[in-house]
Image (cartoon, rainbow over all chains, first blue to last red):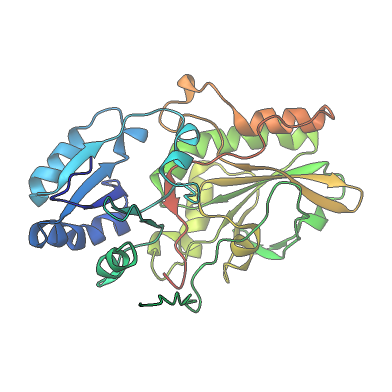
Length: 125
Length: 198
């Protein structure tokens, strides 16, 4: 996923039914739009509850989401949650920030507020 | 040469990740039930253990597990292993989780076990509950209550008939048989508990 022209990767775990997740999407979209050195990937957990990804497609289309969206389709969350981050309880929303140049990463298991992403990116410099 | 100084900032009131680990002693509580009465674990003199479920009205994960939670209670309460559900969500940020809605929900879902409100969120913090549903299985050890399992109910939220690992049932069955629990801790994707200071 990493590339030298987009050293900062922001991977956000969300779902269409998760109100705080949807609320913070504009902050992620804004960053994706304004920063060429940042790549935002929105990982939807919707298929964990609904085998039909239609709801996600409609959401992306309606909200005109520009960041890359990936829909996760893995069974038994317990088998892979700790691979994302050993501290992750599995609660949504959650955001992983990786700086592929410094190798530093930060995992934020809380709702994002204005300024959080910028501060987290500073921390992985 | 620049010397970097790392300053750890402690945000007041932010939920610190603590809570119980498997093997810890669990504290009792006094929480209000949807019928208005106060419930404590001490009320259950004959219980061999408890299935504590941190749950809520609003999370789709909780809703997917509603029937399975009722089934767990039906299966294990008669075996002296009662199930107790606790809602710790802040109703200010999640109006669907108000007490009145809890009363309605309990009735609609046919909850015939306590559905308690954790008004201060103190119990959820003490236990270390993070998302809903989040289960803590406790086993009575003389006068102590020891945490024997922490985690999710099974390995498939969306399809009960596709479940391969029934984590909670396996844990309780093992405890009732006096055997060790094989999987003592699991994690699950879900709605974070709505904390007051989020």
